[in-house]
Amino acid sequence: MSRPLLGFITGSMLVAGCGGGDAVSPGTGTLQITTVTTGAPPDPDGYRVSIDGGEERPLGIQATLVVDAVTPGAHSVLLSELSPECTVAGENPRTLNVTAGSTSETTFSISCTPLTPLTGRLEITSATIGSAPDADGYIVQVSELLEQLVGPNELVTLELAAGEQTLLLSGLAPGCVVSGENPRVVTLMPGSLTQTTFLVSCPGSAAGQLAFTTDRDGNDEIYLVNADGTGLRRLTTLPAADLQATWAPDGSKLAFTSNRGGHYSIYVMDANGENVIDLSQGSDDFLPAWSPDGSKIAFVRNEGRIETGWEIFIMDADGGNQVNLTKNPDLAAAPEWSPDGTRLLFESDRDFDVNPEELGFEIFAMKADGTGIVNLTNNDANDEFPSWSPDGRRIAFQTDRVGNLEIFLMDPSGANSVNLTKHPARDLGAAWSPDGARIAFSSDRYRGPGREDLLVMAPDGTGVIRLTAGDGSARFAAWRP
Image 1 (cartoon, rainbow, N blue to C red):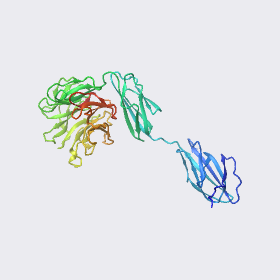
Image 2 (tube, rainbow, N blue to C red):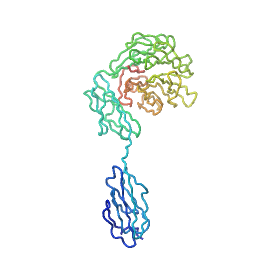
Image 3 (tube, helix red, strand yellow):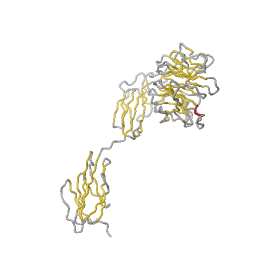
Image 4 (spheres, rainbow, N blue to C red):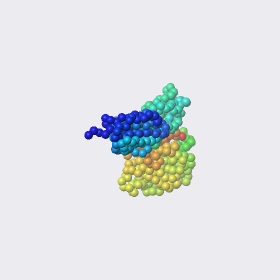
């Protein structure tokens, strides 16, 4: 038995009501198939129609196809080759019953709507160091389709199609170079934010200065260095240990830890190392952190309990009104103010007693009065030394959760953590620059364990620059405001 319709179906296409069909063979019927397309843009090359899976015939977007000599019975009609923007109302394929001597009609109603492309947001930050930056900024070319102007130190946000995008920074002044890949490929996820930073070095001394601790002279001392590694200068000169410096918000003073009085205390000195004042007055204190408004200093005090006596305190900038915020038998250390001064981050092992599976330090947040303590990290690794970005949107910290110390970023809620350094060496002690465009940290990747250098990178982990080298180690970086 032959397949229905094969060998004897004939037909013609009638567009917009024109024409007519061949004579109907005795004992057969006719199919009339019409398309009505609405919306914009319509499918420009029309569609294809097939009957019972047979030969595909072209059919326009507003057209009628008449097929004569169709055997009576049920027949399947399929409309195909629609653009992704177009959809058919009703069944497709659909069944038509043909009766001898009559015409069976159907209309495919097609609606076309432009698709909204899946997009993601891309934040591009330019960060320029050097005394002769490119004054008119740069051009970021996105996948050879879009050009965006960006200043020498600026953040721009673009809405782009999801997927891979190639970025090229151009328009640099003579002598300026980009650290890291240029061009570089970033991958945007639909509905998500992707960030990248172009770190540009231009001639001259660096814009920015850091204080840090180094034992290059035999004991811990506080030094200054420019953000391009030039201008190394020693601030403290005593045989005692001076370390852990932090800047006052106006950059005029430094708070630091020293044992020059026989035990570790919090001291304050001018930015040139002069006018040193002991704020602790006999207490065993360390790791100071100046509040954003300059009125308070948070610090760690050893209350005398062996391995459990560390508490977070705050005091006035002159040493008065010292208050214990944590009041917990477990360790608490490394206080860090939020940019608005309303909260403090710190590290603690207090959840070890609550959850025995958590064996290390976690990062916590609390209000500036010590209430509302929340565990942000909640894992069995050591998460330590948190550093809040100047815009309050990200927290950098050191962790051994991948087996060795790395610098990670996370949201203020503790979510969306990402490894920035991804290096087999020890990377530790992250510190944000005042403009949020750079992160300083210490690493032994160049000289081996116990001999850390001071490095700077962009907030996406690219553009690493080595600032210090030589004897000793460099730790506890702090950017001058």
